[in-house]
Image (cartoon, rainbow, N blue to C red; front, side):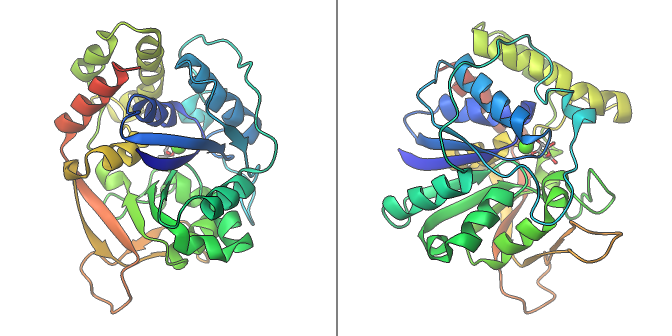
Length: 311
Ligand code: BDR
Ligand code: CA
């Protein structure tokens, strides 16, 4: 199986991504989960990651806590979407499994150095702080990464935390800038893709029909998470962002995109955190990312349901 590290700030949609990985043990070997401050502060994202592991009977998975704040800025959180704990919805027990000793960035560095070159894929579901810290501390690891698949950014679709910026990039734009300039092979799942993946009632009902404890908790998470978009925009469910990253590893043919140059706005107050995507290749700036724009939504939800049923 393909070796992955999941860097995350759970988050109900992060939890869905982790479940998708846990349901795909033949294809994916989760070497560790690293947590970062984002949707909620670090203590809660670290708690939530362990709750998700225990929900799936995966106490064997190593969870490392990482950065508790962005590189240069004050942390911005998203309780308005994810609730006070970040994982509101189901009633789940407090975790009993321990966090691993050491900082997430050091785990990332050590793993990339000890595994064969090109063996490890980084899956990022939150602000890029841990990854940027690791790349800055150990530039030798950049060339050892097989691929970094991220949920982040938005271009034609605009932003979801400011008119210009998507949340994960907005929280730590300096970290995103480090990552996009690093030369690591990037696959980017922006809002342009994730806004096509609404948790419609019929889709959630198919997950509920699985009947297992993880599926039931997932449904309760999704029903909490989607209320924000349903109430605010009258949409047909909430956009399921983070599982796109794992789905891409399992079935890349679900997604369509283009290699292009992406730069991160870090100076302008108005547009800070914007992903400036050269979709039409109007500059001669070198491509640094495969930017996705389209997805087979039914295929995506079918994959999710099939894999959740294997947990
Ligand atoms: C991203 O922000 C978070 O709220 C979600 O978990 C997702 O990673 C979407 O903008
Ligand atoms: Ca997330």
